[in-house]
Length: 395
Ligand SMILES: NC(=O)c1ccc[n+]([C@@H]2O[C@H](COP(=O)([O-])OP(=O)(O)OC[C@H]3O[C@@H](n4cnc5c(N)ncnc54)[C@H](OP(=O)(O)O)[C@@H]3O)[C@@H](O)[C@H]2O)c1
Image 1: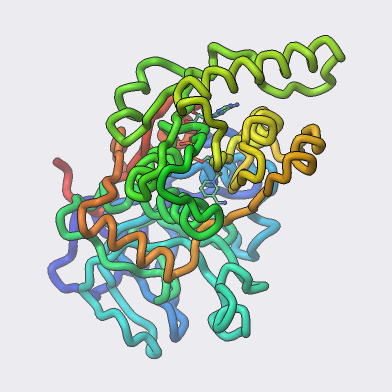
Image 2: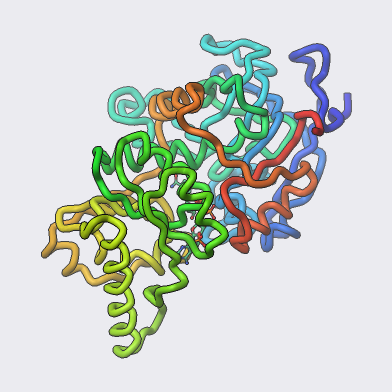
């Protein structure tokens, strides 16, 4: 059988064609998503004993798809041995086939996929945290067979229940960024009621969930965004104050002159004064970081004495330069954080099932427009999350 038509679910659940449509990245065309990602037909993958084949109803767009397309900062072909790369680390779908060792899921179950893969056998997986496994990988970035295809192959432990009240597109939009923000704030920074939390990129994929998590925890999230058209959205998600970063010239730049450094520090202090107006005179207990190079010096400076900077990414560059005196003399902590383990994903997903956390899907694209959606994200022309409709019916 050739590949399925898009937006259809075969009547016989489990009947699998030989080929599937997929958005494919190849080494020789790494570059802008708009040219690097192309629609092709490839074989449906074979399953191992603990793996599951999922019919992908919808997928979610993340920044790692931009990186995979570009081949920068690292080519995905250095991370796995497959001849091509199918990106995509978020999906909702229907369990279509199961490996012979799979017990917790059955064919026909409606699921959301979390993106952490690990060996499942080492002491770290079984006692410490699967995120500490030496074989830990992000599905659809460090592995191929991601979600921008009609079928995807995942480990059985990657599945969580699809919240029944959500559309396929909404259900595919939250896993990666929400579960990451959950681990950062709940697991790593241990945010407490009353904490002031500075949230960079508050209208972006991580930020929209950081705000909602802070609200549930009884903390006060202060949102940073780059334009007034994002104010209403971040306030509706729980921001107790909003700052437009474009009003302050605080960003770190390469090869700064002493004059530029002084100007940057003056502007950072002015940003701090604005922040304190929004918190009743307090510095942030926690800074939610993922921008990296341009904001990190400000994050370290602005954080309260004994406060925490929790970081999971570096959109603006990963070589960080900052004045470490503000860290040691004021006894602040920097916490690295990366995605989440299956238990955290499950607990976080319960809050979506209970309606306490809501996805924020800004736009849905049809499957062939997957490259266009990534291009928008690369150019920072989006708010919230972007979705891709694959087998889900057209509206
Ligand atoms: N380690 C992990 O597990 C993990 C998981 C998820 C994401 N990440 C990483 O975290 C980063 C953010 O992901 P995301 O999904 O939230 O991306 P996103 O949807 O693009 O949101 C990021 C936000 O950051 C802000 N921003 C961009 N450039 C900035 C700059 N130079 N200075 C200040 N703010 C800037 C933008 O908001 P404004 O323009 O409104 O300020 C943007 O909306 C990415 O690098 C991603 O790869 C890591």
